[in-house]
Image (cartoon, rainbow, N blue to C red; front, side):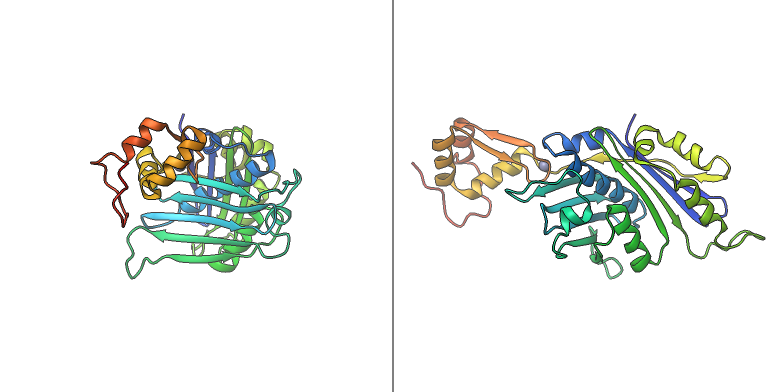
Length: 305
Ligand SMILES: [Zn+2]
């Protein structure tokens, strides 16, 4: 079973419901990292949120959620592309312990200098599709609360988010009031919205993580008529690779690579994003600087020993 995001509309088109539950994608995100539970939860919530927000972007490109923190966590970045492939990373500030009961505030905004941005980045820039950066006020104790404030103030959209993550799953539910839906005759404008959010109000992290999406949506909205859309696949994708790392080592130069080799016996490079290790032994390193290997970006010819 693949990781999927599912989209629904209330029959009168006044409320949008989206749910996502990630297993493989989330395990890939964690594969090369040893995050503590609280860091993992924060990252997983942002990962789930990024898919829920990216599922509605109307261009080919990326949505980036980035928090530059002033507390024990210095940076969290999630990039989700419009095809719902994503990558994500966290940087913990050196020498700092991350409190296991940490919140959005105590992890990232201790001195009020944290910065949460949403970046919409179309692949092809045209007059109607430029890079857009929005500032998310770091309000509330959770990622969900901060993003709810943001959607209301910047997009004028009433939005409720439920987000959760553990070591196996990251999951989320988005309920959003759509503007100008026309409404149902005889129904007050807020009625469907109030029902939609009330029904989900008791949803907890445990249920969100343990129940599959179809069951969850049925439990919450079995009395409603929902229009269901084709599910969208979500997957992990980090564009790093051995060739890119090789290129980087060539740019670093033979002297530098040789000195690392002399010190360590090999050269190990970790992808800054996914943490995947790339190992180059002495023979690999020698072949990097073989006569026919291109030296991208280098101003000087390599020294021949
Ligand atoms: Zn990578």
